[in-house]
Length: 167
Image (cartoon, rainbow, N blue to C red; front, side, top):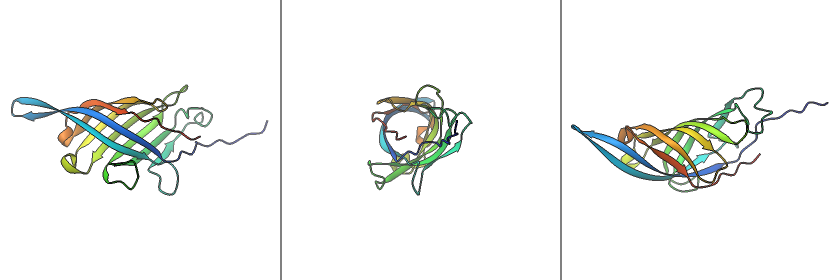
């Protein structure tokens, strides 16, 4: 039987729209005051072409044979914009890693920080760690902390837009 060589699939630009609510505490003297924030931005994960923002950094021997790429890990530094086009105003970056964590479905383990550059959130960040069921129309991932105005943040990151994966 002839051997065939497989490579990781080539994805084109994937646009994710995130809208989420975050609770965070601010300590004012002896009082803790919780504030509610609702943020909406566009996340551009570009894994092909001349200027990718995400790159595959590791895979196991079984990753190439797995329909879910189980064991593959990517690092990313993706722009966050106010609009759906890549040329929209940059408000921050999503930085972290994701890895294929399921042998039976397209699901990623994601660890990332959203670092903001604009307005009241300039210099602040949110930390997200959780499961991303890639093909689900609506997904949620937990916000587990933050810095700056998001110190002690908690909440959920929700994506209401299906993602198209090209294989």
